[in-house]
Length: 122
Image (tube, helix red, strand yellow):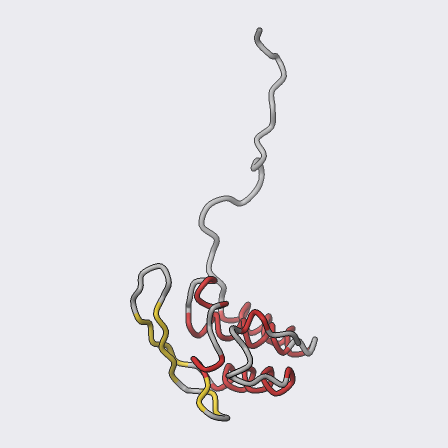
């Protein structure tokens, strides 16, 4: 039994494969949008993702104590990646430090109370 019906591929006309990287103007547009919408958590997580270039699983497993010492957000942080088990050091830019500090203050977070940033509510 042969079927004369032809099925259209699910990805026909869709962009498949590797996506183009974000351009600096796209990154700034996203940052401005998140700032204007007063989305402190989203802005902090976006900035952390851009600065650290970490995989998603490592980003959500960041702890406040990994990026803060006392009341100050660190200029450099180091974590061990889950996939490779290798330490990765990254620099946190001033906009990222400001966004993280604002988020922590807005949510009333403390390093000893929170397991990871994804648990934190805005």
